[in-house]
Image (cartoon, rainbow, N blue to C red):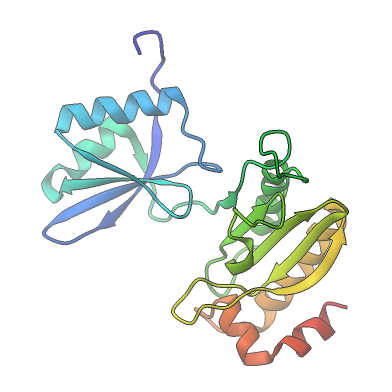
Length: 218
């Protein structure tokens, strides 16, 4: 790795048990570049850290950091934030996956911009984009889910892999990119205006009912 230039990494400290911390490495669509990898590996070697794990949100957790070493590790790896920036879970999509029929990565970037532009919300928004109906982006159990079909995007709202698991409500089918994003924006605006503080979209839909949601989003 001598010819690879190390890149600084943005992390979010997460307190664990026994006076230890994890550093959540903030990635975009799970992309971990060689430069980032070099920085992380050098830091792990320097501080004798042995656990780096993938999260369900397509990020990485560097585990087992003693509390009294936290600031040193952060300085070595890059910089820290109090809250990880939002991200969109995606599958590989068309052009890479043999089952993909839509560009999940490209749509994921567009969806992220819509989510960021309309923030803040009553509670966090998790979203997923899948390039086909197999749903590897976990689109069925996300606050916002997009599923690719040969004729466009199916749009789901109000899913959640939470204590009471809920599948998302299909609010649109076979939509083009712009149509799908406009519908997402409308759903988020409705949630933003009517959701209760710390109420996820799944709880919001349970409270108001699917029919009320679909009526508003016609």
